[in-house]
Image 1: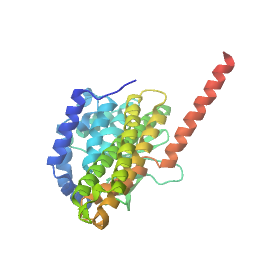
Image 2: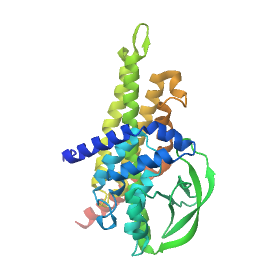
Image 3: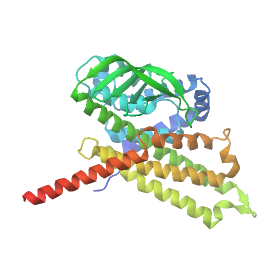
Image 4: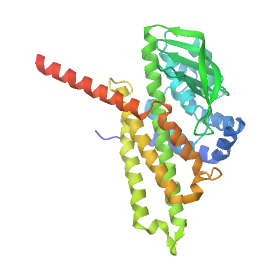
Length: 343
């Protein structure tokens, strides 16, 4: 099976990239990290105006009702720019969660504002033995907590230090019950996988940005009288990054195309693992190519380095996703053996 983005999708990606490039995103990220969300909110409202925040929202709630692949296209560009804010939660996880819940007024209450960019949302998924944590709960207009077969309005607790200053984390406790029955389990699972898919796209975009930054710097930085990009060791390192990103990309698109299939969770886990590893490889290479300047917080490279580090575990650790893939493959093997035995 061959897959390629449509002309409309590539044009959409180009328009989102142009918007983010014009929005002085690094300035907005630094302001967000310092507690000033105004430049970031202005940028997010522009994304909403371009339809990005309404991609996963049905038309009945003021959204676009697009396919998951369109969400991936947008989040690759968001990752490429290192845009701030709980965008995965606002544009991906929460819309899917609210629209998958048993009938309630929750979707009508929040989705129009999220799609329009006038409201931000964040969500925490409770895991046994771990404290639920939500991103940017201090600026979110709605915080949700998914706990097993229940969804609550969340109440912000203590701040938790993040490796990325622009990703402010907070503990979350349950407040008002929104929904609670067996159907919530699947709604929460689909929302988590959608969030992980968007995060994987962000990681791929961030990896592309890091590769571009490293390549451009390698053309300018000189040693022994010539650009370091002419040295074979540097060429090979950057080539390894390009190969890793190119191999991760098909897994990302496959996960988007199979969101409604039984292999959804396995494919999402494969995508975020591959995109996370590729982005990490890009971050290491970019840091080595830049040298000491790459370590400084004042240099823009740091915005992508810290975001990649934080995102790799924000929607499940690599170990969690490897375990999900292993369970899926084991279950498939068991089913195949059972089918052969009854044939």
